[in-house]
Length: 182
Ligand SMILES: [Zn+2]
Ligand SMILES: [Zn+2]
Image (cartoon, rainbow, N blue to C red; front, side, top):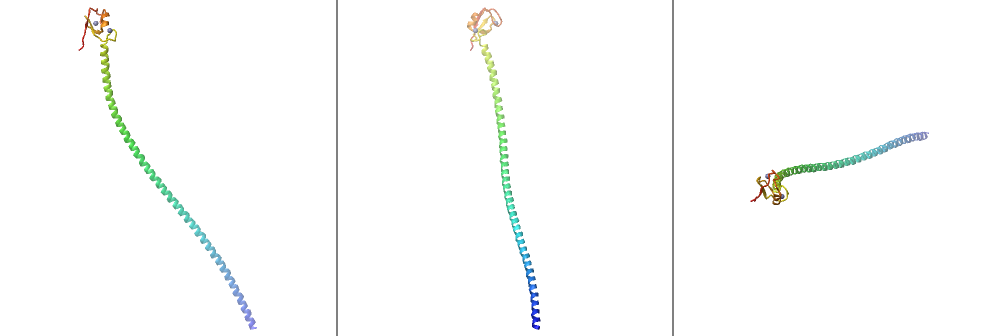
């Protein structure tokens, strides 16, 4: 009976062992599942982190690129501003030069106008003199005769011949004297 008892005991022991092993397997399986889960979560986290890192890198690169673009644009703007400032300066200088030139031209024009006025005045005087040199009667021929006795020097030869009195002072004509310019 001892053997039977021993066999029974062994069987119980084996059953306990089996139970323990099954529990252990179950626990290990759970742990493994848990571990697998942890691994998966870790991998997912890593993926997310990698994605985030990638996104951050891309974002950084984009931002950096944008900054470079902005810097480039800013540089272009600065250059454009400098160019415009130079152009404005040139225009201002040009305008000053134009103004200076204009002032010089105005001065020259004033001088020319003075000369012109003087010439016009002289011309008028000459014209008046020329008119005075024209016969007071016909206004065409040159004055050559003074009437006697008033001696108004105002008449051409044909008009002198027709006059009976002076057209200026109405002194009766007694004679005429030819005048010679020299
Ligand atoms: Zn005349
Ligand atoms: Zn007269």
